[in-house]
Image (cartoon, rainbow, N blue to C red; front, side, top):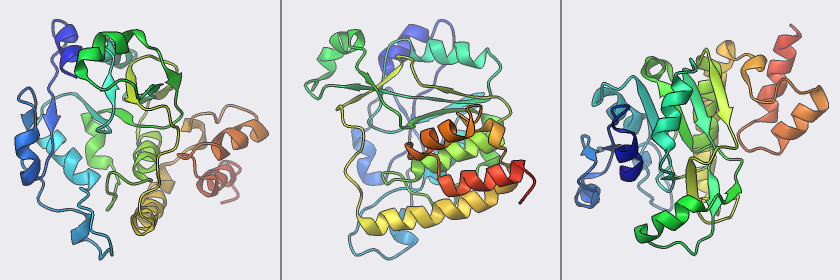
Length: 257
C-alpha cells in the first residue's frame, strides 16, 4: 500500500488509515494514520462457545468516514496486497463517473513470503479470483449503508458489502480482470469459520437483505444482462449472489412481488 501510494501521490492525495484494538496498536506501521481504537467486538453482541474477538465492519467504516475527508473511501480485506498502479487506476475509474466499484484480486503462489519480493510479485499476474474483497465508494454512500451487526473475518461480510453497493450506488461497476490487487495463496475458498460465527453473520445478512430490498433493482446486479439460464448459473456459482434474494428481484421486475 505504501509503494502504491508513493507512485500515485503526485496525481492524487491518498490517506492510509488503520482501525485496531488497543492491544494491536503497537503493530501498526508508522505510515498509517491510526484511528481511534476499536472498543467492542462481536463478543459484545452475542454469546459464543469459542471466543474470537472480531470487529464489526460498521465500527471500522465509521472511523474511516469520520477521521478522513476523502471523497472516496476504500475498504480491503487485511490480506489483500496492491500492485503499484492501484491508486492511479482507482482514480481513472472514479473519473469515469462511478460512485462505487469492486476490484477482484489475483491469486499468487504462497512461495512469496517477504516484502523484499515485491518487485517479483509485481511481475506475477497470478490467477483470477471471483470473490469480492476490495470495495471503493463515494463518501456520500456511507450514511446509507445497512450493515447491521456483520463482523469481519467470517463469510457474509463480502456479500453484505457488495449488495449494499449494488442497491445504493447510481453508477456501479465490477472490475474482474484487472491486475490491481493480489492475495498470497491460490486457494479460492478459505477454511470456513466456526459454524456459530458463520450462522451469526448469515442471520445478520438476511436482516440486511430485507432492509435493502426496496432499493434493489435487478438491472443493477452484475450479470443481470445475460439471458435467464446463464445469469442464474453465474449467480449460483458465486458466493456473493444469493439465489433466494435474486429470485425475489426477478419477481419484482415482473411486478409479481
